[in-house]
Amino acid sequence: GFLKISDPYALLSKFNPQKPWEKSQKLGRTEVIKNDLSPKWSTLFFLDWNFGEDFYVRVDVYDEMKKSQDRLMGYNIFEIDNILRFKGGDEIKKVQEGKG
Image (cartoon, rainbow, N blue to C red; front, top):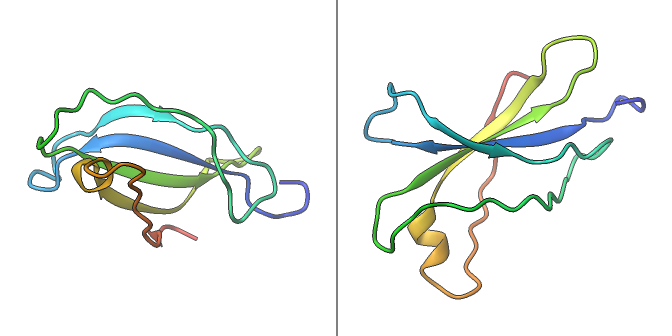
C-alpha cells in the first residue's frame, strides 16, 4: 500500500489434510483491506457441507502488490465441523508463516 503497510486479502480453498498432494478446490477470496495489519473481512462464503462430514478449509493470506506478484503472508487450516457444530461457533488460530 501507499503507506507501506500490507493490503491483505484471503484465499479460501477446500483442503484434504490426509492427501496434501491433491490440488485443493478454490472456494473464493475476500476483498482487499488497504493499509491494515489486522483486517476484518466481510466477504461471505457458502459451503456445501453436511454435519459430521470431514471438511477442511485452508486460508491463505496475501499482501496485494501493485508492481509484483502478491506476497504470501501466511496460512492456516480450519476444520469446518469444529466451527459450525455450536451456535455462534468460531475458531481463532495464528497464521503460519508465509514468505515474508
